[in-house]
Image (cartoon, rainbow, N blue to C red):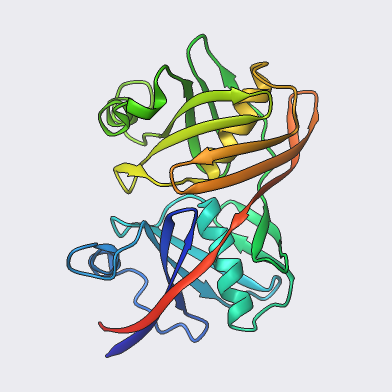
Length: 260
């Protein structure tokens, strides 16, 4: 059987997109998803996303990590899926969709920039040398010296698999402050088990962590990721961060056909 797929990327986070509104895709086939995401024997991607019908919202997002397993929310993947839905004429310029962490609102500007509303964030754990929170996925945020030369894969894996987060693990973000409203970050993603060029939920976590720990008073923050630039805005009410938006480009790369 031949399967049509689409490839999208958001600041270097790349995804295989499949229109599964007819429900044909074998969703429990972990090996198949992993093969599609393999950069040597498949299409190559950080993850695979199914666009499916939903009775209440415009569509449903089903996200798989590159290891073939379903996973928690992916912010850049969500933004790319919104762009995909628009290209399929499923939506126009705004939408709602359901994902594993709940309801999301999103819009697409004329220049292709996608703004995605993330979940409200509370229960932030602030320690001396790191901050932890869930922005749809669990994220460890840590300021480091010499971010440019930091061994993200080795140090990220040590934290991801270490005793701090147990078997479930966490995504790990290493951060450098550039100025009052700008930060650079590099992310080790669980499920990919390597550094990725960007992580949307990670950028969201970094922005909120930097505000929560007093590194910035800004509520609109610029994030330099390895694959480009993102922005995160929010409203802060006490310990609650609400109206959280992840903003950045989401671009079509190519489409093709692959044998199942």
